[in-house]
Image (cartoon, rainbow, N blue to C red):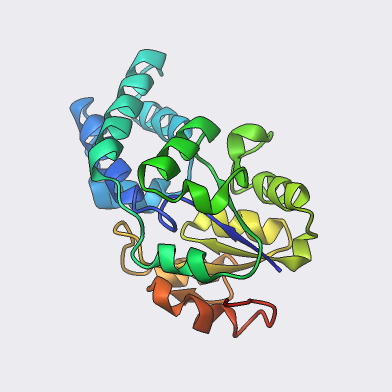
Length: 223
């Protein structure tokens, strides 16, 4: 059994940072959106798609410089504010199964984020991004790409995801998926939202990882 982790909101508590900065930036252009609304609407989606959507709603032209400035603000905040999800290091240290990352974040920034929080050594080269495939989540491409590179069939994969688009992508890839609700951006009702698109269960604390996953996968190994 291969365990595939999403990154933002599962390994690192980044979504809450990106949502706040993105909302503040959108407000500076006249779009009245809160950080909570931004997280609910855009969690798990590519940042370019998020800004294109904001521009469309504002009725303004998408400009590359504006988008790059927003990205710069987020990445600068990550350097000092980014933290791991509590307990994920313990899970990775003790997990006897093969595991990897499959994220919407572009590959370079994804690896940088994992380096900054000290998680990269757990994964080595087993880090996969939607920037390496044709379509981002909710398409199944990045999950199928990860499974292929790791040498596993989709039905032998378990995905841990926090976003609606991620759960949809995992299900489209014919993989089991469990929703994680422990990120700082998770709003009330997200549990039901993840279940409604195919999550077989949800949990809030990474220290419950083995208890929850072993209910559905008898091949999860704790060393």
